[in-house]
Length: 154
Image (cartoon, rainbow, N blue to C red; front, side):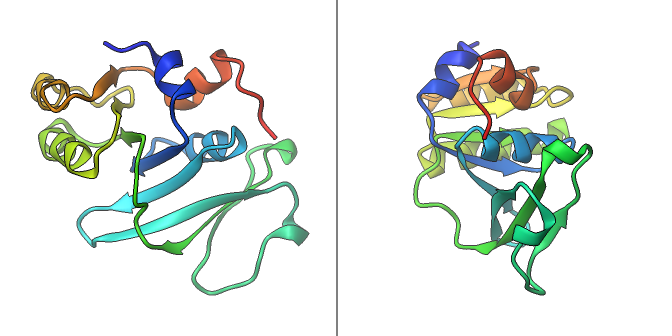
């Protein structure tokens, strides 16, 4: 398994395929990563942004706003966007049966790493990712890894 800290420090764009809680994209955005959420079945993507207060959140019917768990968390806002041209990390929180296909997607996207969130395990996905030259991280919460790495949050 690749060093999570090394994977994070070499990345700037993270694409998420599902996530276990809103803290994941919120932490990544606050740490300075460009964060996209990909819906592979619909072929759509959203871009995620963070706003420290409600009065800064833009208006729009096409926005999904995630309320903060704590006041200091701010607001996570996702809006439709084109899929990113490049992806450094594809982070996945999906059932095992979907992971090999998502590993192939990571290779197709030219990602540098495939990161499987805790609860998502697949030796076949690992093999596909590593054979495609991707770093592979499994069983580590990416939001917790960002905090553990000491990456400053805005």
